[in-house]
Amino acid sequence: MEGMFAYSSRADAEDPKKLIDQIIREKQRIKICSLSRTFECHLLWAHYASGFDGVAIEVDLPDRSPHVKIVTYRGVFAGLSIERIVNPAKTAREILTSKYREWKYEREVRILHHDEWFPLTKPVQRVIAGHRMQPSLFKALHIICQQQGIRFCKTGIVDEGIDADLVAAVENSQ
Image 1 (tube, rainbow, N blue to C red):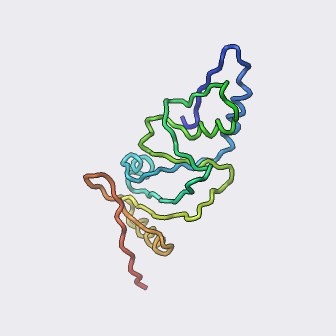
Image 2: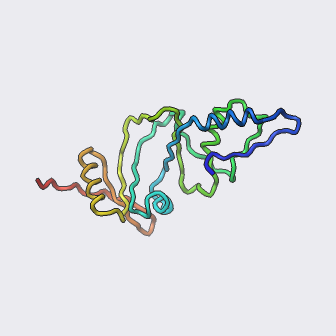
Image 3: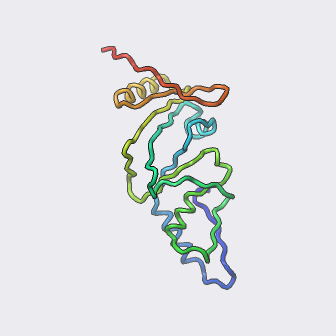
């Protein structure tokens, strides 16, 4: 359902096919990175981190980048009125930054970009391991984060929800 849209036009309007084809081509040119503005949601851990045995990676996104968009939530399809479309590229971005309201819990933000990579000045700020992660993977990630100077945390379930406690440094035993 991602990127789906419905359109309407006046009965006396020209055939909208050309404009719709332009919007579809613009959508196909865009690379999308979907992120969440929270790690504190059980459903996110269930859906995207294999029931707390995965990982969340915290990054800092630029505040004023035209490529970073907070997702808006709406009905099943993004609705377009053909007569109001001025710029197919802008319309494609609007479609790709809206999503069915049932997914609102994701608090999604998207990077929409044409290039292969989107540069970040301060890439990884924190790695949050799920509390069900395999011990060997947990230890390996912990060592890598420590070597790279990245905060490493582990989720915990508390009455108030999910927290991320900092994991103590690994002793160097060589």
